[in-house]
Structures are given as structure tokens and as C-alpha cells.
Amino acid sequence: MPVRADDLSEPADPSPPPGLVTIGRFDQRPGYRVNRPDGSDSWLFTWTTGGCGRLTQGGAEVAADAGDLVVLGPGVPHHYAVEPGAEHWAFWWVHCQARAAWSGWLRPYALDDAVYAVGPASGQGRNRRSEDRVEAAFRRMLADARWTGDGPPPVPAEPADGEVAVAHGAAARELALCSLEEIVLLATARADRRRPDIDARIRRAESLIAAHPSAPHTVRSLAEAVALSPSRFAHLFTEQLGCSPMRALRDARLLHAARLLEATELPVERVAAASGFTSAFHFNRVFRQRYGTPPGAYRTGVTRGGAGEAAARP
Image 1: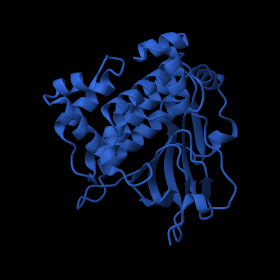
Image 2: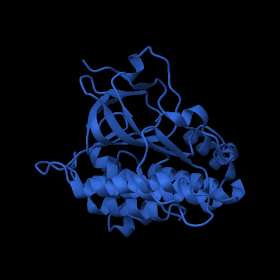
Image 3: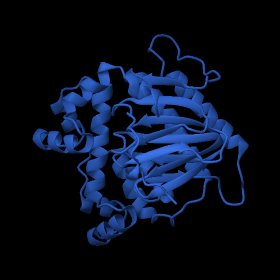
């Protein structure tokens, strides 16, 4: 019988603070489990290399075997553990804020409650060359997360069990996210899509938003760019992507603003304008709704450093 995360009575485990990029590799034995009745403030990416794990978020439950990428979106109660009967669960994990472009790659593999499960393509089994490249990207990500910006980044090495790194510097965070972007792209490009392909015109509009979120996009301008009428475009976009074009634009702008807050010292008003928000008041309000903290406090939390105890658990 499936176990819902919000039905569990065990103590809640912390998650890394939002805005940080935290990466680790664990090889856990039976009895290992993590429970977050309130979910996490950031996205959790897991890549299983051996054994099997079981991840439950909201009403969705996934068994993660070797070669599987399972992603848990933020804000939904979740629980994960070594799969009952399995001898162990070896996996890489990353907590971070997902880049806007990744949503389109992951969407075909969406289950319920912001769970995305990406496995090998049907009939092909595991692709060792692809998995080796993903493994190399994780090792590079772990090394890059420790880069101080002085001299070349560290050389990737064989990770120790339980090794965890937090990318504090702006350059280290961006390099780490670039490696994770490669991982997401490699995994989603080789696997089965659980939903039919999105209309190419809608994908094009989504790409335009992700590539330049601060541009003065409107439903009409996006519709014209993909040769659809505004009403037809808005209907197709909402039907296929699950949110309106303007909601997708707002989310992309907020993510762009979060990156600017993390990587620059621009005043909050400049960040708002550079992200496409014409009103600083509106920007502060919607940013707090999305990230749970005002823009200034978000930047302070990111630049302050320590992930503390939260960084020790994925």
C-alpha cells in the first residue's frame, strides 16, 4: 500500500536553504529515510547509480533504479528511503533552484504532485555510455562547487560516500548548474516521454520566454512569433503546458531575478527592472510569494554561506 508523505509521523528532516546549490553522493543501507512534511524550498534531483530507492511526494510514488533520474519539485510533502527489500541505494543528489528551460525538458515525464521520473528508453535497457557521461557531469559538478575562483577549478575525483559540497561563490554556482543542465538534458533526451510531444509552436514560445524573460512579451507578440492567433495560442499554451503564457513569463522572470540576486550586487530595483518588472512593489510582492522571502533577504541568505545541518541531507 503506498505511503503518503503527509501521513508519516516520524520527525521532519531539514532541507538546504533556497538559493544554494548543494550536491552530494550517498550509498545508504536499509533504514535510511528522509521525511519532509512541508516539502523542500528547492528542487531535489536524484540520480541512482546502484541499488534502489523509493521516493514519495504528495500522491505520487516512484521506485528509482540504477540509471533513473527522479526530480521532486518544491513545496510538496515528500519522503524517500531505501526501497524495502533492497540491499542499498547509491545515488547522487542536488538541491537547487531549477533553471526555466528545464521545465520543458522534464514536463513529458511528469507524474502527479511535481514529481518527474526519467528512465531509460523502452527496449533499450541501460545505456552505459550515456550513464558514464552523466556520472562524469556529477563528479565535475561536485568539484566545481568547491571552486573559489582562484586558479583553475579542481579536478574531478572519485567521490567518497557521504561527500557533500555547497557552491557558495557565484562562479561556482553557475558552473555547477551548467553541469546539472547537461545531466537533465542527457537524461531527458534519451528516455521515453510519458506524454505526447508538445506542439512545436508552443515549444518555440516557451523557448522565447526562457531565452529572454525580461523582454516585453505579451500574448499577442508571442502568438505572432509562432504564427498563431492570440486566442488560439493562449488556449494551446495553457492546455499543453498547464499554465497561461503570462504565468509562465512571470515564473521565468522571477527565476531570472533570483539568479541576478545570487550572482550580482545590483540593487533590488535594478534587478526588478532587468527582469522585466516595471513596478518594484509588484516585484517584491510576487518574489516573496514564490520564494518565501523578500528579494533583499533572499540575497542575504544566499551570500551568508553556511548551509549548516541542512546541507548534510539531500
